[in-house]
Amino acid sequence: MTTQRARICKGCWQQMRVPVPLHGVLSLPFRMVGIRPSRMNPNTCTICELMFTRVMRARKISIDATVLFADLRGYTTLSQSLPDDAVSGLLDTFYDECASAIWDFDGLLNKTIGDAIMAIFNFPIQQPDHVRQAVLAAREIHRRCHARRADLVRAFGSQGDQLGVGIGIATGQVSFGEFGRSHRDLTAIGTVVNTASRVQSVAGAGQILVTRAVRDGAGPELAEREARAYQLKGFETPVELFAA
Amino acid sequence: MTTQRARICKGCWQQMRVPVPLHGVLSLPFRMVGIRPSRMNPNTCTICELMFTRVMRARKISIDATVLFADLRGYTTLSQSLPDDAVSGLLDTFYDECASAIWDFDGLLNKTIGDAIMAIFNFPIQQPDHVRQAVLAAREIHRRCHARRADLVRAFGSQGDQLGVGIGIATGQVSFGEFGRSHRDLTAIGTVVNTASRVQSVAGAGQILVTRAVRDGAGPELAEREARAYQLKGFETPVELFAA
Image 1 (cartoon, each protein chain N blue to C red):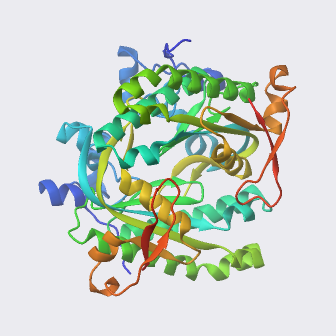
Image 2 (cartoon, rainbow over the protein chains, first blue to last red):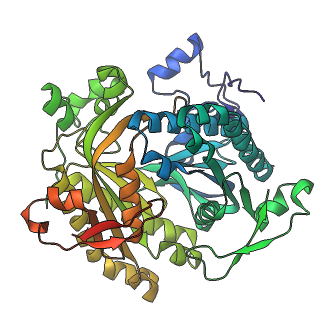
Image 3 (tube, rainbow over the protein chains, first blue to last red):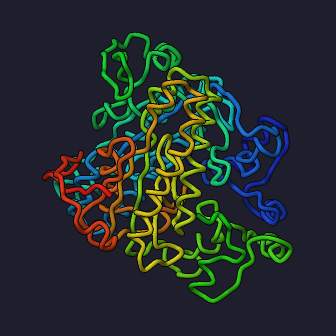
């Protein structure tokens, strides 16, 4: 799996055919005016983040996107018996492995929320197969975290073995842009985001659960998966989910 | 309640006696080198945000802080039956009212997470009475959101009346700094943060629940409040909480 980083902003190139250097001496004039690799995806730049207000002249747009939530199971319990620096090292590792996996599949690591992360696929880099890319990123998160298991057991003893990652994915129309007039937070909202979060909450450690729309959009590989009904918090009727 | 914003960075003045202009013509040279009001608290500047890596030469520090989570109850259900722009307008309002309340009491609006927000008190502006300030900010969030109730009912009908804010507060040592080596997220982590989040999850709409440490630290006004035991997710034994 490549972890090579792009030399020019993938978003600006794809959407405007403008080469914005991200590294090296050519990037210096850009950095002086505040254009640098995005924290949410270092293969894109801060112009992409601001595209709404500055370029598109809209604070929010409606886009088709896939949203992924991943949560480090066992973290709350473990953090109660560990010193703060061990806990923070654990989160550093979790965030970093998630970031690498998401960026490998051109996703945006939009938020870290305690022991969870939220990623968005199809913006600013457009991906015709964003549903499939999100599923592949989820598997890569599992692969990477599993590869670190030996380190965790060494660091945290048998408790380290109880750590695992639960992942939920949903896809559809989201409202993407800056929310809050004073705080200004760039994120996606809508039913799809809530659903992805709730789906993650019922996924077990080591499990990837997806909605029907994700199963249908991810390609032939998931087409045969059978549904199981889950009662999700805030949803009136049970929701059919699929293991991916 | 003042909503007047500071003219110089409160954090830099308090900790270094350096006047960093936030607005007007005097702020222009600072803005050219990337120093501007912080998104998390516009009465402080981006130097305060970067204080760890640049000034303190440490990525994380252990500090005594109070952490507040507030969640918009009824949002998930409401968002399923509303168009995206109505939902995003609702979140804009919620984020803005929370931001104003938190900044009035010198807190840091650290994260917005879907229908929830997380705030930290005692950094970068140090507050000897940060526990009490957090409780006052929580009440101000309720007061502000209640004042918007008529607007909500007008916008969303009877469903608007079912919206309410649940708030949880915890206090103690947190690990504060930048987490994730590649994504770099400035936040607080530790048991106190998890606890505040879990406390919020059991608070009803219109309720503020706090831990014993918050009750003890908030001043005489809360000293008489009686405990009720709650079972919090991820906690082995029930936790005593107090209504504030």
